[in-house]
Amino acid sequence: SPLHYLKSNFFDVASAEDKFLCTQATGEAVTRMPVDVRPLYLRALRLEERYDHVLAAIKVLESSKINYKKYVTEERDRVRRTMSAKAEGDNLFRSGKYDSAAIRYNVCLKIDSEKPGRLATSGGRLHAILHCNRAACLMATKRFREAAKECSAALRIHANYRKAMLRRGRCYVKMHRFKEAIADFNACIEAAVKGKETFDHSIKTKEQIEVVKKELEEAKRAKRDHETAERAKADRERREQEKQRWYDENVNSEDWYNTNFSGRNYSRGGKYGEKKNGSSRNRGGYAYNQQNDGSYSNREHPNNHQYRRSSSKASCEDDEEEVCHYSILSVTVQSDSTAIKKAYHRMALKYHPDKNKDPEAATMFRKVQTAYEILSDRKSRREYDMERNFAKSFY
Image (tube, rainbow, N blue to C red; front, side):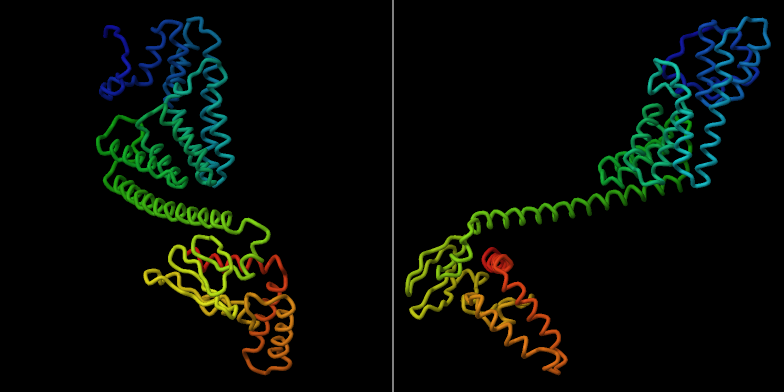
């Protein structure tokens, strides 16, 4: 047949019988090619894993009277090393030695990088498979980021490589890159349903396509769950920032403890008012009123029941969900260290297991010890009071 230009879409539109020559025809065809084209043809046959054809062509060149050059011997050596390294990698992978298998696949890839000027996308079917096999090894060792890069390298060579699409989608799911994973699963399904031209037919039947569709639905569900979790995390971070901002605005001086518990009334919003007998300062819906006898009572706004709090003399009656150390020692928040120490000795003597045979005495004794450890230390007491005060005023 007459010669014609080989266009880029030849392998997409040509029929199967037009694409490949038989082994014998390959040997005859190579002798008719220009000398400069022969090395490229032999390499192309090897990279498409047509080892029988390339060995037949090499045999014809070596046995003919044509003065073949060094490239024939070099290409025979590359074929031998390629077949050996890939077979070793396959055996190691089947044995579960994934790191060793990945190394052998990489050795096979580097056979064609010995010559300068090779393009990353010029590896043909062989290199696409090697990249995808390395991705499988890396996935087995939980190195999903590297595995995704290997799949991308395979897809740069063969854009319709379905197995590479599927594996990269699975890697993206593990990396929580759900949008890209969904795109890869959709592309894999589309390539299989439409029967796009590819050497890879690992995903072809309806059952295989259904498996990919299930993974697609799981990825969509995981994406929704992840977005919900991210929103919850962002909300928690916002609340923490608000809490920190409240501390920065209201508890930013060393004398906060003395200021807060030396008779100044506390109002919503973190502002402090001056102490006045029989007076109060109401900001934001509630305030504490100081009485003439020095005690405090609470006046709440009719529309702000959530801000209802006990007086400063109370011993944490509102703290139902957690133990209040002041209540345990039967002291108030204004008690000094001497009063707290006396209360501790009194309560410890009362609930000491050797003195008190009540089954709950030992538990209460431990609570008394914990309360005293916190309230007897100025720093820990100040932190504890800030936490209580924040819980009562911020929310």
